[in-house]
Structure formats: C-alpha cells, structure tokens
Image (cartoon, rainbow, N blue to C red; front, side, top):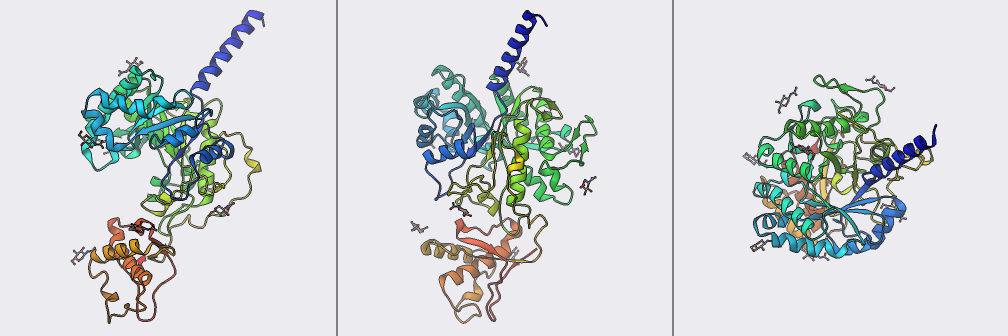
Amino acid sequence: MGLVVAHLLLASVMFFSIGSAEMSSKVGVCYGQLGNNLPSPQESVELMIKSLKATRVKIYDANPKILKALKNTDIQVSIMVPNEIINNISLSSQSLSDQWVRTNVLPYLPGTKIRYLLVGNEILSLPDKSIWPNLVPAMRKIRKSLKTLGARKIKVGTPSAMDVLQSSFPPSNGTFRSDISESVMRPMLHFLNRTKSFFFVDAYTFFPWSSDPKNIHLDYALLESTNITYTDPVTKLTYTNLFDQMLDAVVFAMKKLGYPDIRIFIAETGWPNGGDYDQIGANIYNAATYNRNIVKKLTAKPAIGTPARPGWVLPSFIFALYNENQKPGPGTERHFGLLYPNGSHVYEIDLSGNAPEKEYGPLPKPTNNEPYKGKIWCVAAKVANTTALSSALSYACSQGNKTCDPIQPGKPCAKPGSLVWKASYAFSSYWSQFRKLGGTCYFNGLATQTIKDPSHGSCKFPSVTL
Ligand SMILES: *[C@@H]1O[C@H](CO)[C@@H](O)[C@H](O)[C@H]1NC(C)=O
Ligand SMILES: *[C@@H]1O[C@H](CO)[C@@H](O)[C@H](O)[C@H]1NC(C)=O
Ligand SMILES: *[C@@H]1O[C@H](CO)[C@@H](O)[C@H](O)[C@H]1NC(C)=O
Ligand SMILES: *[C@@H]1O[C@H](CO)[C@@H](O)[C@H](O)[C@H]1NC(C)=O
Ligand SMILES: *[C@@H]1O[C@H](CO)[C@@H](O)[C@H](O)[C@H]1NC(C)=O
Ligand SMILES: *[C@@H]1O[C@H](CO)[C@@H](O)[C@H](O)[C@H]1NC(C)=O
Ligand SMILES: *[C@@H]1O[C@H](CO)[C@@H](O)[C@H](O)[C@H]1NC(C)=O
C-alpha cells in the first residue's frame, strides 16, 4: 500500500469516526422527577455518570438546578418546553418564545451541553385537542429564537407516542392518524426535514405485548428471540423483534407523507421492573433483559439500524433514571427506574454498552410472565396521610352504585370502623365497579392492590376477579 493511499485511508477513517461520533450510538437516560424521595440533582448527575455511564440525559422541563448540576460534564442534554405554555408561545409574538429561550437556555450555554429542545411531551396523545394546531407553530418560533439568539445548533423536536400512528402492522402499513396526518404531521415533518432534526418517538414494546401476550411472544418483545421472525408481506423485510417493527412503522408512515429520510431519535424506551397484580410481565428479570438488549443493539458498532434502515444510528434515551413514586396510573408507571431512589441499581446495567454481560450476577426469576388468575382487592396503603385518606374515602363512596352502603352504621362492615378499614372497603368497592371502565387502584398513592382477602367475619370486601 502506497503512503498516499494509506494517508487517504487514514483521513477517511478519521473523518468517518468524527462524523459518527457527532451523532453516535449513545444511550442516554430520562431523568423524571415525579418522586418525593429522589436524590438531589447533583447526586443524580453523579449517578448518571458513575453508576450508569450515561452520556445523554433528557429532562422534562428546564430545571435550573439540574442544568447547573450538568455544567462542565460531558453529558449531552435534552430539555423541554412545558405543555402548558405551548398555546401561548404559538399564539403570541416571537418575543415570548425569545424570552423562554433567554431564561431557560442561554444562561447555561456553553457549560451545559444542551443539544435538543423538545416542545411539549406527547402532545398529540393529549385529549385536549386545542393544543394540537399550536404545536408546529410553537416549534418554529422556538427554533427561530434559538437561531437569532445564537444557539442554532440545538435541534428542535417533539416526542410522539406510538399512538400518532393509526396503523402499525405490518410495518409497511404504518400510517399517521387521519385526525393529525395533514393538519399536524405534514407540517411537522416539513419542519424536521428542513432543520435536519429528528422524529422523536416514545417506543415501548411492553405495551403492545402486555395487551396481547397470547399473540406476541415475550422473547420477541424483549429482543431475546433467536428463532421468531416476521416477514412483512409487502416489503419482504424480515423482523426479529417487536422494537424494529414499531420503528419501521414510523419510517413507513413518514415515507407515505413524502419524507423518507428524517432520522429517528428514541425519546423513550424501557420496561417496568415491577407493577400491580393485574399487570403482566413487569419484573426485574424482563426489565434487565430488555434494557440490556436495547443497549447492546443501539451501541453496536457499526450501527445496526432496523430492517428498513440498515446501518442507521438510533440515538436514544432509556426511561427512566429512577422509580418515581408519585407518577399516577397503574403500578408499572412507578417502576421504570434503572435505579431505586436510594441510588442503588435495580439490576446491573451499563449504558455505554462496554460492560461484559458475563460479569452480571444472576437475576431474580420472573413470577408474573403469565396473567394473574384469582381475586384482587384494593386497600389503603400502610402509610397514608389521614386528611388525604378521608377525602379519598369520601370520593370513592360518592362514585358508583351503593359503593359504601355496607360500611354505614349497623351494616356488616361498619366495624371496626377505623379510617384505614373504611377506606380499604371503599377502595375495593370502587375498584370492583370501575376497573373495567379504566378505573385504577391508586388514589394518589393512598391505595394499593393486595391478593390477601381483607374480609372479616360477615363483612365481605368486593374484589376484582381475573
Ligand atoms: C397565556 O397568556 C395569557 C394571556 O396573556 C395569560 O393570561 C396566561 O396566564 C398565559 N398562560 C401561561 C400558562 O403562561
Ligand atoms: C392497514 O392499515 C389500515 C388503516 O390505516 C387498516 O384498515 C388495515 O387493516 C391495515 N392492513 C393490514 C393488512 O393490517
Ligand atoms: C428534505 O430535505 C432534503 C435535504 O435537505 C431535501 O433534499 C428534500 O427535498 C426535503 N424533502 C421534502 C419533501 O421537502
Ligand atoms: C424457538 O426456540 C425455543 C427454544 O429453543 C423453542 O422453545 C421455541 O418453540 C422455538 N420457536 C419457534 C417459533 O421455532
Ligand atoms: C435501596 O432500595 C431498595 C428498594 O427499596 C432496597 O432493596 C435496597 O436494599 C436499598 N439499598 C440500600 C443500599 O439501601
Ligand atoms: C395531607 O394531605 C392534605 C390534603 O391532601 C395536605 O394538605 C397536607 O399537606 C398533607 N400532609 C402531609 C404531612 O403530607
Ligand atoms: C350503576 O347502575 C346502573 C344501573 O343499573 C348502571 O347502568 C351503571 O353502569 C352502574 N355503574 C357502575 C359503575 O357499575
């Protein structure tokens, strides 16, 4: 090999590695803060770097304490314009957007490496449709502010949940919902393409799998299968996991609107390490398996991509840094963390993808990979604020049919009559009527599911039977 050729090769190798380092296959973490027991921002940043080896973080606001704690670290940061101000930013003059950027972005540059600015969170999944038409105009205004105020390198986007798709199966049939396709998605894709930004998507295989575990193999959802494949009848592309299928559905939906080249950024993915009795597959074993497989796939060099986009880099954030005890909804919502609030690992994981997997210790065997069969009750949590518990009791009793009749004086459940007893009865009674209508056993953290029958003597607590 001649010297010149060698130099050229070296130059091209260097160029390539710099180019791919810029948008490298790094895995970051989502730093949600909906917990009343979480470490400080300073401690959290230490944990991200030392415990998780994260090189990116996404926050759901522009919290000054967090942005300061990230100063002079190598972590690339994604911040968010809150949902509540999108209408105002869209509808008022450019100056409101300028002001937001001046207050929430500029003071932290360049020390804090803010690289992405997401406008709202899953706006197109909100029932409040009045924000939808303001989303893209707000994105444009924010981008203009960044440009004029000297921060043009920050990419502007917005995270979409998978329900922006009307159809995602087979992947080639990926189509945006008809209520947003022309009005929101087309102008959004135009904006993302013009500004060389990303389509940010929240993609969880857990949700489609857990709602249809009979037809989707768990291993296919966990990226663990070696022999299950699905071939798209139209494209003939062969899929080996559900994650690729979901992403390619987005790729084909974008293509249908004339945008085949917009890059995808995984704004959230993950798997819950715990949940309620009526939820399937939420456990440490599956969470560790999924997240380790995702890290392996997304940090592979050269990049793997998806069947429709082989070799494409997929930058990503795993949800989430911590189990967050104040997230509403079913139990899984409070169990997506890589870390417990005390900072210890729920299971070993290394987001850099460098840890040899052989060195990981054994995982607890999963016990809920099959649907639970039996009765479940909803009772007051052990430690509960009594003021809040009384209001929740009144609320539960005011809902449904004869919900609290049996705890009235003289009725079989009137005794022992303590607040916790009455609330437990009311929660069980409420939940047994409302679960099929989407009601949850949560009551702001005051209630929890149990499979131990709380009934006593002639007082039978209503239950949910699965
Ligand atoms: C939006 O603007 C209106 C009118 O100026 C103001 O009253 C309201 O407080 C603003 N909302 C938010 C969330 O800033
Ligand atoms: C493709 O998507 C459409 C809706 O956009 C749906 O009606 C149709 O059933 C899907 N095709 C297949 C083969 O699933
Ligand atoms: C998307 O951007 C590319 C590169 O800038 C450009 O060539 C292409 O025409 C754009 N596509 C559309 C549909 O605007
Ligand atoms: C895949 O392999 C597993 C374990 O070897 C086996 O139990 C399963 O039946 C196989 N599935 C298919 C679709 O071949
Ligand atoms: C941290 O919290 C978890 C879950 O509550 C617990 O299992 C673990 O022992 C705690 N670790 C330390 C070091 O306190
Ligand atoms: C208890 O709940 C009430 C009403 O929800 C609230 O105002 C109060 O601050 C709470 N007390 C404590 C100690 O959390
Ligand atoms: C209460 O009873 C009415 C009439 O029987 C019924 O239509 C309604 O669905 C019941 N509500 C609940 C929450 O079960």
